[in-house]
Length: 244
Image (tube, rainbow, N blue to C red; front, side, top):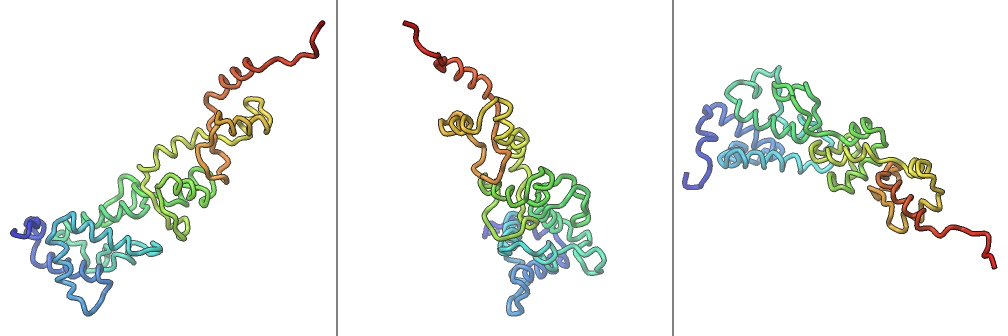
């Protein structure tokens, strides 16, 4: 208690579950280094409470730079193995498994209904760029650039299926994108020539919602009709000549 650590995190666990999980966690964090005291590493993490545990797991995931490994590859012995007699599916590991499940669901693109650590996923939390691009109907490399521009993902050489983002963070962006159209649609809808359209863009009357050039549907037509009507009203009418 003198350290300020949460005394309830390990005190409520059985000796078996605490010792076993400390070893598994320590081994996963140290990547199986045989020179490391896995029990001690795991204990030093868990004695700090749930937040310290979550931070250690997130750090373990973030260290996998290319994120090419699946959950099992990164978590190692912490991965749920329902068929193994000595796996962590026993009830005594419940509090630890609940945290593993929480971290897993917020880092991998599980679908609703997928079984993660023995329980079905009720809400999809993470999505891959590839899946989102397919659902929206644009190329995955284009969507990746849009998400990078919005600050929702970082530039990386990972393939689209390995680039993940939090769905709730992208909800507003995707809602807006449903109303975006391409330049041709705006020109035809308002009777603009390509030159007139470009002139309005240059003057700041029309602006793209994204600077990703390869994204064709990036314009919002709202408010253009009144603008064009106002410009037509202000325009000096052409005359054939002046009468004497």
